[in-house]
Figure 1 (cartoon, protein in one colour):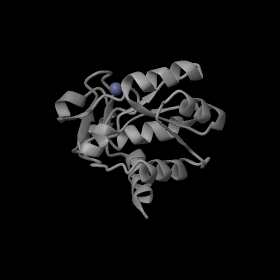
Figure 2 (figure 1 turned 90 degrees about the horizontal axis):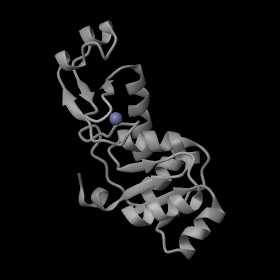
Figure 3 (figure 1 turned 90 degrees about the vertical axis):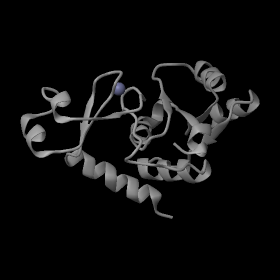
Figure 4 (figure 1 turned 120 degrees about the vertical axis):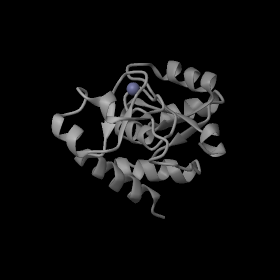
Length: 160
Ligand SMILES: [Zn+2]
């Protein structure tokens, strides 16, 4: 992981769930916790040194007042959000070499077929070669149809 990413840990607010999942897949350390109040999120961001990402202007104002690093997102669509986050925070990515679990933010590790047998559909096990596993929650990842969408999203995000 690059120096910049190590520096940039994010906390995305409740409205940005899809962006949170994708940023994790792209390798960024993203906290995403639902059903927490603004104050709790702000203090968590401060404690963990995370930049708080929100679309809520009053919340952003509150962050500024309390010295919490934040980024106010203007776009309502996922691609627009990802692009703004990448550009404004100067994030660098090493996808797909470094990925995190979309569910729990843990760094994924490469897995061999025998490890994911029973976790992925039989045809996937037979036809795919590359697999990853989340060491924490056990979620398996492979290059299926969903993967193509993720790659497309990544390419679009990286465009100028
Ligand atoms: Zn996980």
